[in-house]
Structures are given as C-alpha cells and as structure tokens.
Image (cartoon, rainbow, N blue to C red; front, side, top):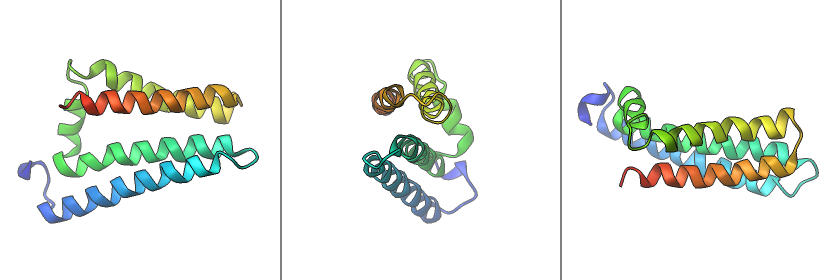
Length: 122
C-alpha cells in the first residue's frame, strides 16, 4: 500500500476520509432532495455522485491503478459491471428518460450492487 502513491500515508488517509465523508454527505443530501417537487433528478445525481466519491475514496488508500485492477478481478467482475451500469442507468432514467420510478429502482440497485461489490473484498 505504501508504494501505491507518492503521497504520504497521512495525506492519503486524510483524502480517503474527505472523499468518503463527501460521498456520504452527497448521498444523504440526495435522499433529502428526493421529497422536493422534481427532486428525482437531484436525488439521482447526488446519490450517484455520492457513491462515486465513496468508491473513489479507496483510490487514495491503494492507488488508482491497483484499485482498477482489483475492481476487474474475476471474483468481483460481475459486481463491478452491475455497479457501474447502475450508475449510468440511474442518470439516464432521471435526466434523459424522465422516468422517476425507473430512476428510483436503479438507485436501489446501486445500493445493492455497491454492497455486493464491497462484500466481495471480504
């Protein structure tokens, strides 16, 4: 892990925490915006951005190249593909197709696929 980046361990740990907290903040913010009129678009964008920030936070711990290699290992390949596909489909459903129910479904699938992806490391 220490060879994964030229950043010091403390710097990488700080940026991990910043990205992870931002990811949680944006996901919670998106959930709160869901209840506003027309809030499904904001919900989908903020929730997806929050998940991406949380996912990106681990790049600071292990480095982006190692992160990508681990993401596409055979043990978690399917989970990674479904997770990334759910990110894209959530945004498409909310922003281009204007299908609220479908956007909400894809957000739920995002949560489930992120959980599956995370558990694949255990």
